[in-house]
Image (cartoon, rainbow, N blue to C red):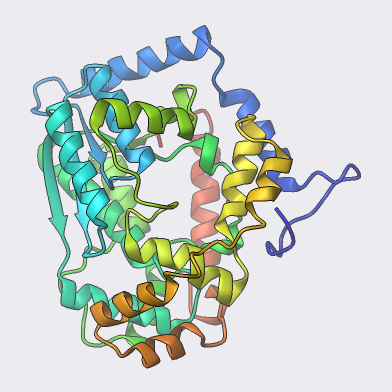
Length: 364
């Protein structure tokens, strides 16, 4: 990590606050062999108990990527009755679609696709691009959360199993991606830069989240925090067991997300998500700092194919390539430049964490 995070600070030994916080938290929740295995089996039994009398024990969000594919494999291996749910926002790569189909077929799990209204969704995406903020992919983040909770409530499922994990995602500066559930922020951007009213898009704000959590009793559960998780080893298992295909880069299971993280954020804000991912991997010992620095010497995007990516995305969004380039090269703005509920939401979430601080990282 470096000072592209404006909130970073270093101790006398040159160790940054991200690594200090990460290692401090991991000391309580990292994989500890038999002890963690016991907690993992206990969690699996809790999920099965909550699923008694229902068609499914859990919902697993499937993107076709490594994390979601591997957690689906783990869940099925442990005997959970899984319903796979995929948010179809129109940007799936061919490899991701094939991976999802293979996962459902080979694991023998039911699968549902939650399809967004494309005309409305592309206008929302364009609005966030025109707002020129780092949160260009927030519309997808919100839609995924909403879709998973809607389907869980539909079937009475209490556990949504996420591929999110500490081993590869434990470090991510708050300044790099503002709260996706701030609807004041979301709605202002859409109103100022978008077109029409939101009719079909599945919004997901704090109040909706609390409804599902406390009224419906639905939890987000992170199984990968209870197993020794290494991406390279996971890819080997997925390739062998599920005929999984590599889609060519981090988050390129979605052509849009891949472009946003590898090119848009780097060129507009100098935010290279690889720094956060590699820092997390250094902290868990799966890569050395020297190896990580060597990786960062190479561009985050493919200089040969990026022009074709922009042509594809602009055409799909319904704007000319010239207009698309002018939009993505607008001066960068930050969430603080627009109306938001940061203070109120911060107070609410801080209070929640204090009240429920005893909850484990397995469920939220």
